[in-house]
Image (cartoon, rainbow, N blue to C red; front, side, top):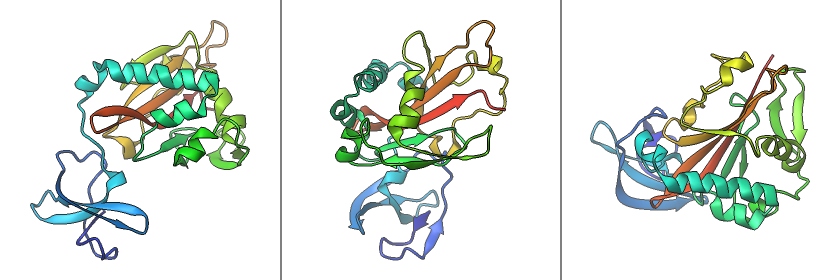
Length: 231
């Protein structure tokens, strides 16, 4: 939503779709209740205010997929996970957005914000609601270290990296047509790490798509979305 001014949270003047591009800021900003709001030029050539976290630096798919810094960042991220190095992980995550994780693309976001939460993510026993299990229909309630970490470990080694695509090999999983990068993240590029199935167990594949947000021209880890065969 775009607000008429930063103090009138009830006066929405426009709604911008997630894929909107070419948004320009006027340079004005203000903190309200712990959140930074910035003034933008609206598509109708007016002005309005939006939360800064809802904006991201625009990087074309071509530029992103050829950026060696982004590829290196994914390697550093996977290394930090393998080493259970929370301090290193915190250095790689977007300082603007924090780390958003989805157990599946259609399940809700779980948000890790701030250095302390990220540095302790591998040891913290806090239980989160990750959404609904597709098979059982039961709520998934567990800590990051007990639920998500083993699923990320599963794509370590022998995996294929694909830029801005979820197509490679996933058709063998039987869920073609159901997997997609969430529309809310339309302007954020990603690298997918795909662990293929083995012969005789064709449905046993897994992918983690790693959304990368640029902050002051530098790539940072912002979003993790898991994909796997679903019933």
